[in-house]
Length: 224
Image 1: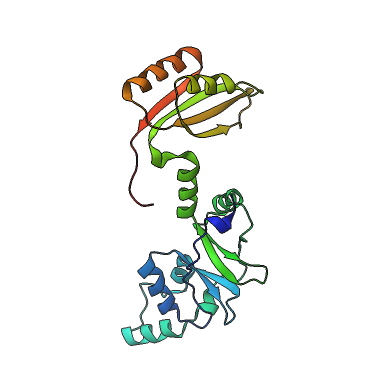
Image 2: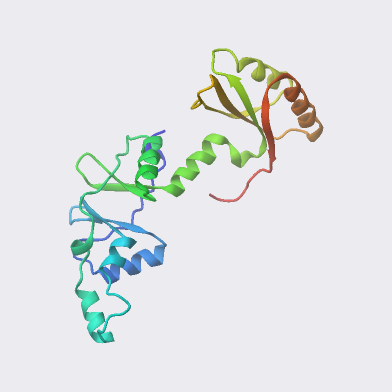
C-alpha cells in the first residue's frame, strides 16, 4: 500500500515568516499538533509542533504586561522556532513504513514531498487507521475468527475449505508471525450470514481447529 493512495492532499501549512501567534491559531482551529513549513516555492523547509510553540512562549510567571507580551509574541516568527531537520515521506513510500517511523519517533503525522522537495500531502495516524479498517474489512461487520496455526505451508487451506463449504464470503485474511514457538496467528473476517448459519459455522470451526476467539460485529455505515 503506497502513501499516495492514502495521504491527505489538502495540506494546511505555515511559512517561515508567519508569526508564531498566527501559526498557533491555525493549529488550534484545525486541531493539529504540527504544521509543515514551506517556502515561496512550496518546498518543505521545516515543521512546527505545538511543543515548539510551548517552549518558545513566555512562562506564566512572566512580569511582562499584556502589551509587552503581545508585542513579544507577535515578533516571534515560525522560522525562529521550527524544526529544520524534517523527517518526511514520499508518495511512493509504503504506508507500513510510514507507520513504523511514526511509531518509533512518536509522530502523529509526516509531511509527504515529491522528488523536488515540494509538499504534496501529509500522512497522519488517522490515515493509518483508515488503512487498518480497509484491509481488515471491519466496516462490513460479520464475524472475525482468530486461529493459532503451525507456521508451515498448507495449514490455512482446511479452514478456508470449511468456510467455502458453508458458503461464507471472506472479507480479509491477516496473519501475525512474530512468535518464537513455530506458530502463527491468523485472523479471518467473513461477511454477515444468517445468524443460525453463523452459529453452525462457528461450532464446526471450534471443533476442527485451534480457535483463539471469534467476534461478531455490526455493519458500520457511518463516514470515516
